[in-house]
Length: 149
Image (cartoon, rainbow, N blue to C red; front, top):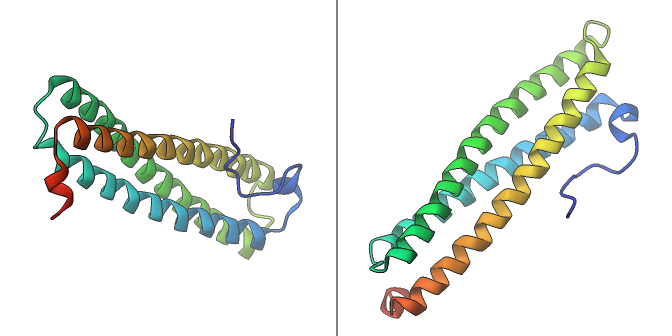
C-alpha cells in the first residue's frame, strides 16, 4: 500500500510544534481544495461521454464510477470541514496552549491525516478508472469525432 502521508515517520505529531502542525494542516486544505476541483472535472468528463453511450455494459460501468466520484466529492467536503475545524483548534491552542488537551488534539490530528491519506488513495484510484473507461468508450462506441471538437 502506498503512503500518502505528508509528515515524517515516527513520533512527529507528538513532538513537533504547533506552528508546524498549522502549516501542515493548511497544506492539507490546499490539497483537498485541488482534489475537489479535480473531482468536478472528472464528473464533467463522465457526463460528456455518458450521453453518447449506447451499450448497456458501458452505461453501467460509467454509472458505477460516477457514483464513486460523487462519494469522493462528499467525503472531500466532509474532510474540508474537519480541516477547517482543526485549523481553528490549532489557532486556539497556539494562542492559549494550557486551555486545551494537547494529547487529544494530536490524536485528532493523526486521525485526520490518516483519513486524508485514505481519501487521496481513493480519488487517485477513481481517477484512473475514469480515464480507463473514457478511453474504452471512445474506442468501443466509435466516438473519435468527439475528441476533434
